[in-house]
Image (tube, rainbow, N blue to C red; front, top):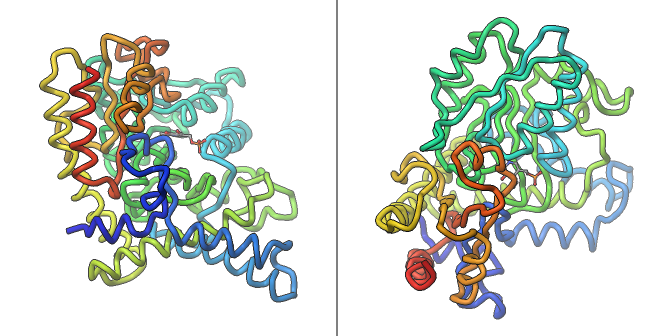
Length: 405
Ligand SMILES: Cc1ncc(COP(=O)(O)O)c(C=O)c1O
């Protein structure tokens, strides 16, 4: 069982005077940062803030730490070090990827996108219509927001080069079966691009085992600094045209990151691996980096599922509330969007008065909300938590909801 006191001890935010009594439920927007990341960021800025990879000590150490971040995170996710790269954000990464596919695809080729995604993994791809490519939409069930695999099968044929979908939508919350979807797409001869931004905070997945060609997530939601992280499997990465400087084409991790990376934040991302290792050690989880990551993932998920079910039961029982997505905790992330009679944002503001930090709006999932009949102008109230959330905070949330709904 997750030692919640140990966990919270790794996050300085929980010890801050200004945040006492404030229950944080906007984690899907961005998580608190763990101590090892903050320590590494501080160390980089104070001791190593020089151009990395030069032959003097401060520079050598800075470069080593940047490589360490890639190496350790890649190992946790079951991929090679050079299959993992950093970009300014996931959105920036998808725009670069869409450009690479624009150059790679042939006339008559098609792409499948969903209307469940955050705009980052759908808008850049949809723009390929302007270049003469076909874009097919895998549509959610308007009631539940669910993506049905049979509908995807009907969209796949030999024209499809790429299938883009979320591991988990940031408003529906349902965990999509990446392995099955990937297998279907691969069988049809298509590559797969998964937006893992809403899933990765609940435990880094083993991308190597799951099989997608591209897996994207954002470190600022996984207890790290503000970076986008991209896993690009070698076979696809070496096939797509290089998007970086021509002389870097031989380096896989530089091919899809044309912007110079933020060195300090890349280096500090190794702190995310430190944190996972600390959790593993404290809870007696051993093995390879990937095995430990899986153990930590399972530990986080078990805690979240336990806390989530009472919240789902509570909101499901309220007639004035429409719960978006599944009502069973096991199949979903603790990212709970609610359609209310009133707009989401003012209700979030009322919650703030009760010490609950939550958000309201469309969360850039405009297409998903529209597809489910929710006016994006009105938006939803979103309550999102992660493994460091305590039972007492969920209780505080439900009491606050009692007052404002
Ligand atoms: C599911 C999902 N995908 C993509 C993004 C975009 O990530 P970034 O802010 O790193 O561009 C977000 C951000 O909220 C998100 O929630």
